[in-house]
Image (cartoon, rainbow, N blue to C red):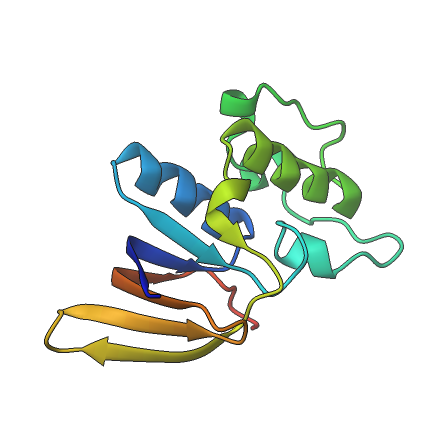
Length: 139
């Protein structure tokens, strides 16, 4: 069975989470594909001791006001940033739109449908008007 969405978002870090939230606000249907077991992107994968952001938390961490969160220090550490990603996903009920432990195996334009066909390593197949890449610059 092929499921249809307006947008398939690749990645569930800050960019992906923000996209899901804003696309939903615009009334679009969204499916997000994430290789990790949870949201967070860079902050899901990089959990080594001392990991922190070198940009001020108030600038770096999105949706602080909307979630009612105040960072605990000027330069947030990785666990706090990862927890904020989870907070965003919970606050806006974004988890329901994300497939975890899922990798894309194929993306192909379907001329007849004027949509993208996206296949995954789990056997999922999606048709989408748009694909939004939020998988990070180093991926």
